[in-house]
Length: 106
Ligand code: FES
Image (cartoon, rainbow, N blue to C red):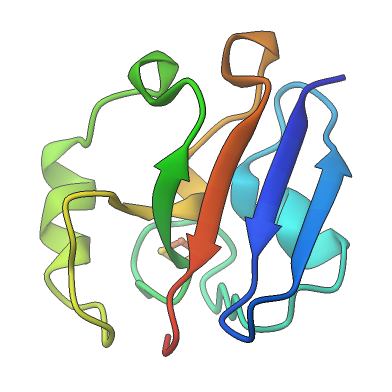
């Protein structure tokens, strides 16, 4: 099972074992990371699942789609080069060891 490290805005870090196929958003919210609001449930319309990808096999992630890029224009925290919508990041063995930091505001 691929491992995902989630850094909360407070600095607390959690390492999760995530079933392949679940998104980073699904894994984090299931683990009680309440800072990720994910109001739309993964339909890419709320932009409240903003994370920064900070380490791990970044190149194995799917590229930002046009739709995600547009939705990232509505995030409340500053958009950075590693900004992603966590609902668009599927976990798999290829991204084992991924590290994300939750944006301070959603
Ligand atoms: Fe709404 Fe990701 S959960 S955009």
